[in-house]
Amino acid sequence: MPPTTVECPWCESPTPAGPTCTTCGRRLPTPKVPKPATRTSKWTWAVLALFVLTGVGATGHWYFTPAPPPGARPAPAMTDEERKAAVEKSIAATEKATAASRR
Image (cartoon, rainbow, N blue to C red; front, side, top):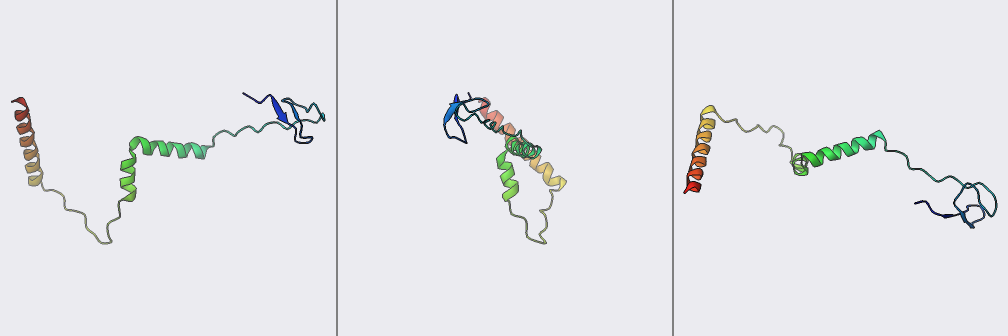
């Protein structure tokens, strides 16, 4: 709700909100209108929303995880036999847990 009275910047007397001052008769300045959001700020909010939607924890993990030292080699990948053994172990554990819950 706009104010009902404003202070005239020239005579400094309270006057009803309108185009002119009732005391000195000078034209009152128009109120400042906020500018609409710029494209840059829209992109900033979009990136922040993406961080929130994808998980701040994942973003923090990506950002704060230290880089490996220079010349470090990645861990060797699992062989087919190791992968097959891991899957069989997981299936056996699942079947065991399922059987225990049915008792």
